[in-house]
Every structure is written in C-alpha cells, then in structure tokens.
Length: 405
Figure (tube, rainbow, N blue to C red):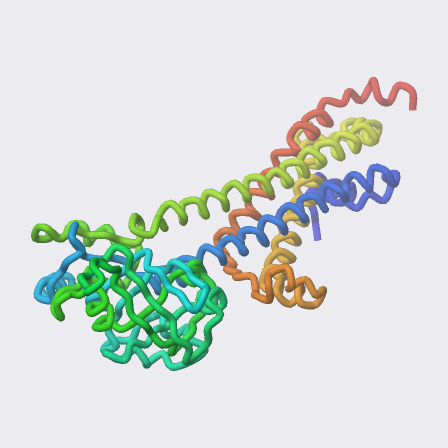
C-alpha cells in the first residue's frame, strides 16, 4: 500500500528507533501527560456530574418544587382546588401541607430543633420511600405518630415506639397557667434516611395532627405543595396569577437550592479548568520533545530537502509525528477514563478505600458528549503544539547542515 512520504517519515520518527533514550523519554512523557490529563478530566467530570444528578434527583423529588402560601401562612382548601385545576397540565401532584419551622423536639434531657411537615396520608409522599425502620403508613390522624430521620433519632437517642415531645415556641395558647407554647407528645413510628441535608432537621407527622398542634381549623393549611413533572420549569408557575393574598414560593428561593446548584456547576467548571491545565502542560512537553527531535534530525532534514522534499512536506512530517502522539494519548486517556469512572467504586473497594466515603458509593454519570469534547480538545491542542517545531524544521538550510558531513 502506497503511503505519502511525509506520513511514512512522520510515523517512523514516532517509533523513535534512532533516537537516544532521553528524547524517547521526553516524547513518551508528553503522550503520557495527555493520557493522564484526559483520563483525570473524564473521571472528575463523571463524578461531579453524578453528584449534581444525585442532588437534583434526590433533593428535588423529596421537597415540594412549589408552594402556595400567604404572608399569614393561611390557605384554604377551596383555593387549592381552584389552583390545581388551573395548573393540571404542569402539576403531577398537589396537596395541602402544614409547615412548622423551628420546633423544639425533646426526649428526656436531649433536645434539638426541627422543621415539621404535616402531610396527608391520602396520597404517597416521596419521603416515605426512604423509611427503613417502622411503618411508613403509620401517619394516621389522631394517632400522633411521627417519622423522623436517623440523624435526629440518634441525637435524641430514640427508636421505634419511644415518645418525644414537640413544642412550638411561636404558637402560644391560653392555659390555667397563662400563655404557654403549644406542645404535644408523639410516638416514633418510623425512621428514614435520604442521605441528604433533609436528614438534619425534617420530621413528618399527619396533617390533621399538625393542624391541632397549631390550633388551625380543619380546612385551613399553611400552604399547598406542588410536585411538577419537570422541577426546572417551576418558573412557568410564576406566570399563574394568584388571588391576593396568595403568593408563590419555590425550591430556588425557599430552600436556597438555586444558588446551591449554581455553586456545584461552577465548581465543576473550575475543576475542569484546573485539570485542563494538565493537558496544556502536556502540550508544552510535546513542543519541547519535538524541538529536541528537530535539533537531532537537522542533518536528516537537510538530506530530505536535498532529495526533493518540499517545505510543506517537512512541516507535515513533524505535525504527523506530534499529532499522532496526541491522538494516541487522547484516545487512550478517554478509554481509561471511562473504564475507571464506571468502575471507580469497585476499585475503591478493592483497595479498601471506601471507608473514606463512610461506606457510600460515589455517584457516577458518564456524559458521552463531554467525553467526546474533551478528546477533541486534547487532540486539537496536540496539533497546535506541533506547528512551531514543524515550522522550525522546515527552515533548516541544507547547505549549512551538510557542510561538515
């Protein structure tokens, strides 16, 4: 098979049979540097994508994406029905909720602060899928059962069947002893663990029990929670005009998750930029290795020119040599990066490093378009890195180099 002369010479130089060991070492280091850079970038991006997907999926499926409330935290059931019919195309689930913030929860001498959600047992709640102890269907009206997180249970040193006291400092009621905070004893009927920050302070009771705790009428709630088919289209609900004094709250502002997800995305970009510098350094190593090859091959370049090779062909020789090295490093880096990313949890377990993750697995999300972009950019950088050494090689003067041969 006939090869162009520049391709033949470039590939022969790439093998480096006639190069000294130092030049071979520099050439291999540049290829290895691109491989490591591409591989590291793919692994880190896959882990960051996994974390972002896990946070979005886990958090946004557990918390209401939108809530209708008022300045007085009072919404009637009639208002819920009206809004539900107006937004049926965008909403997959809507129901009333009673939210109590900064409640005091105690057991014996242990006390903590928690946010209470009073939910209905008529429709399934996403949080109940993470109940691992007790009965997730135990939130029956007038039973005064409570489901709390494993973290809260550990803080209060309680388990299934134990009693806890819930006190609402901001809700004062009249008693023979004067104004006292509303309080009630509840029984622990379930313990959940989502692996998110919700475990820090969220406890769940029946909505009717929450109404009695706040002394609310049976048809009055603090808000109406909405679960959307696409949580990231929550801004479309803002176009829905609400009768006064009702107003929208959503996960972006109410839970400060909008800023949080932006921070995660920014951190991923910064990490990608920093690891991209590894590929850039490998590109400079390639420039150095090609310059050394040019200095070593000056006499051969002079002979090639004497035999009729044109300046363009000399440039192609060294571009092919450097670009092939970059292509090999980029493709191998992409292959190894994907393989390690998909099996990183098995690798950590094999080396007994899963203790660093507290027994949990790293979330991995391999994005094929990202991988392709990283490989293409690495190859492009490799090609760009060859231009200057190749141009210098084409400027070799045959008469000067062959004078002392």
